[in-house]
Image (tube, rainbow, N blue to C red; front, top):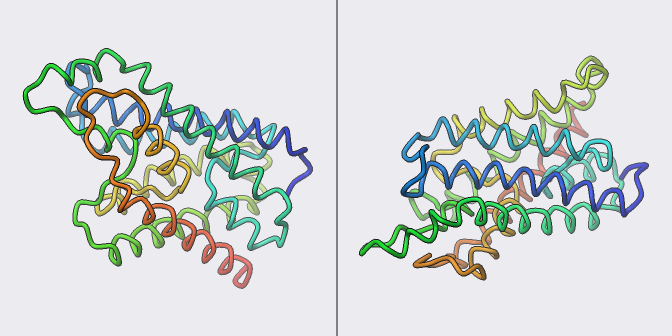
Length: 244
């Protein structure tokens, strides 16, 4: 997979993914929770918050692991290159990092989460940590996540082969804007997980953290934002390998 050691890959992906989730779940908390100064700021703010999270996390992790931050990206690269030996290390670091990022978000908004107990009708909090479809249709939701992730992984692979982007160091910046664009254009149906670790790690922490009146963690839907992105990442790697 790379010239980095397993330990470098693990800690790079852990740190980078933790930063990604801190920014991403953080902006969701900022827009959602009562007594937040960004309350009801809207979808555009959320899309840019996640994009900046990708930028911060990927640039931070790049010297150690390349900054995948996403099992679907790791899978797409492996499908394209045929290098599978470190895939498990990348995914492990991403999952642990996502859980740490979720805990950090909870700590940042601890008082706001606590205030949720004071309302007669408590605000559900799962949407801060994980995705929830607007219309619950497993087939449609799976297709949305697969197509949106394909639209992420194929350009990411192409950006990596664009000499000017790689040399100048702006590849990660461009990917960050790509994530913003996916959120604005394709995020409406499901909330655009496009990353199994981004959804599954925080969902697990939502289930175990002592968040007042938090509601369900919706495990019946949890497979969709895992399987869909993995399908999309695989197709992205295959198409890139065949077409380029």
